[in-house]
Image (cartoon, rainbow, N blue to C red; front, side, top):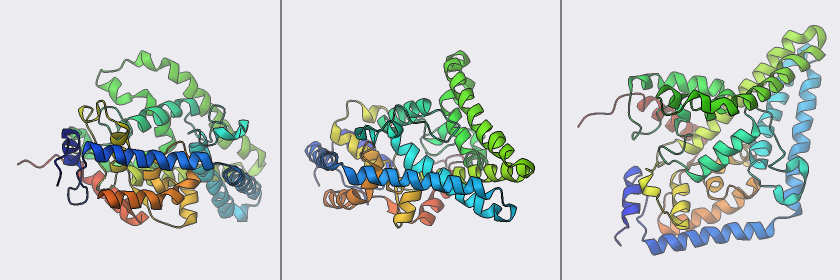
Length: 367
């Protein structure tokens, strides 16, 4: 086998050597060129089918929301109301909000689907999320000390994160983050853990506080006061229904996102490993730092196509509906280069994530 550059040698310390081949710098350049070619081909092919798709999803999402809100006026239909509203919130957050705010549909020229104007049904302000997610996370994917999505500043999700007795609570923190996921995302940019350790001053968060509070007030008014009040004496049932729908959305989003980032075989990287990386290195890092979830069209739709997290990290600005289309080609290229393509059913990836959460709670074994 051809000797690998030091960059790749270091990266491979984090992954399964039996499943990942060492690439030369020339091979990495070729790999990057093939990924660029896929992206450019899809960009050149964007058109009415893509526009019709996202508009149809918006139409159905709004239909589910209207149906859910209306069904709260019929107490026996409460479970159906919750189910309908939950589907609406999942579609809005996953397939519409997340993807629209990535700029995947800016080319349409539709103000309602423009990344600069869209703000989702979530307590996290869209502008704040776009900075922490679109820029920080997608630029420094799985780079320790840069990508704060590794554990969200709360969890230990990698053996290279220094262990502390605090992490014995890893399973509890993960459960609470899952239940209150939208709130965890909203608080993400406050970097509470850095304030605690003294590397960030609380005064630095003043600019963020106002935006978060505006969004929190708006969401709380809508879900927990306005819509319940409109149902009059059914206020308690409607209030409970909105709480439940948000809970279901939080649990679903947490599990999909964690299965795309933290199952076994997903790599992390040091900042030194990623200095002056080429385009091929960047694509290589996205591939090794991601995982997919197998499933049918419904799974892909309800996950916002983040069931194709590998393709999303490779091509974050392409309409997510195209990920299943390019996934076969990406996988074929990976097989040709001998690269790991981490994928599996939801239950397998969830089990792997859960195992990691519990394992990382414990101190490293000595020796």
